[in-house]
Amino acid sequence: MSVSQEQEKYFMEGNAAEIQRLSFQHEVLKNHIGALVLAPVEVSKGGLRILDSATADGLWLRDLAGNVPADNTYVGTDIMEAYFPPESDWPSNMSLTIQSITKPWPVTWREGFDLVHQRFALPAAGKSGLKDALSGLIGLVKPGGWIQLVEADHSVFTGPAMGELFELVKDVFGAMDVGYDHARDIKTMFQDAGLEQVEERVYDVPLGAKNPDAEMGQKSAHAFTMGAAGIVGAAKSTPGCTFSAARLDALKPSIERELQEQGGVNRVYVVWACKPVVED
Ligand SMILES: C[S@@+](CC[C@H](N)C(=O)[O-])C[C@H]1O[C@@H](n2cnc3c(N)ncnc32)[C@H](O)[C@@H]1O
Image (tube, rainbow, N blue to C red; front, side, top):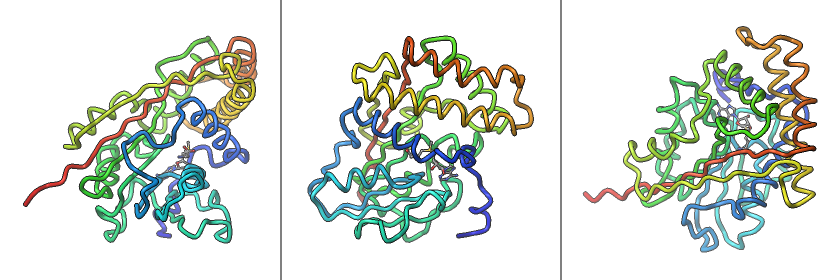
């Protein structure tokens, strides 16, 4: 692990329950969207190399690998080594490596993946690093291979507490100089990068009382409330955050109440594209 990658921080890292939040969020999203891969990649044909960037504990990869009877190779990367499960628990065809999306990727990985996936991590590139991070990811895709990104759109909310939370996300990310809302721009960024067959789907994932499945309702509300608590915690240690202590303290209980009583939606964009094969 390079020193510079060690120094990068994930703003939710202090949240002890982050992996549980991510696992509930994964379950709720999969249940609503109905698939992990929307790009037209035949994952069951085997022999593919699949990367999940910003993988946390590799759950997306492990879930995919567990449902595809094929000899694919799965690679996960993240800056938070503490999130990786013990190596003895990794499936034999999966490896996890420390790698930041803001740093150069190993040269031997260039054009080495049939599918590059990343979910909820583009803001970590920072405003000025977005273009380079995207081109780093695209550089990993084989000609004829696919990239799929999943990001949330924080401009859409249902009740006042959700509105307040997204206002705080904007405030904290702004104070950290991190890009706030990339979801709606990914399609254009892919097109501008010369990718082909660019497709976008938009999902309004129902949270809490709005989710027709009681278990998913509970898990989505819990995950969202934990996320709100994490953002509040980060806000308290972010110089430049404009929310008062009283406003911050009110946020978690009001999100919890709103999701239990009226529910909400989380708008999520799934965008995928193919890297063209360039003829000599
Ligand atoms: C919101 S979580 C999403 C995790 C996973 N992709 C998912 O959908 O469940 C964001 C992840 O990005 C990772 N991360 C933060 N900054 C990063 C960076 N510069 N490079 C790579 N990963 C980063 C965090 O450690 C965390 O695991």
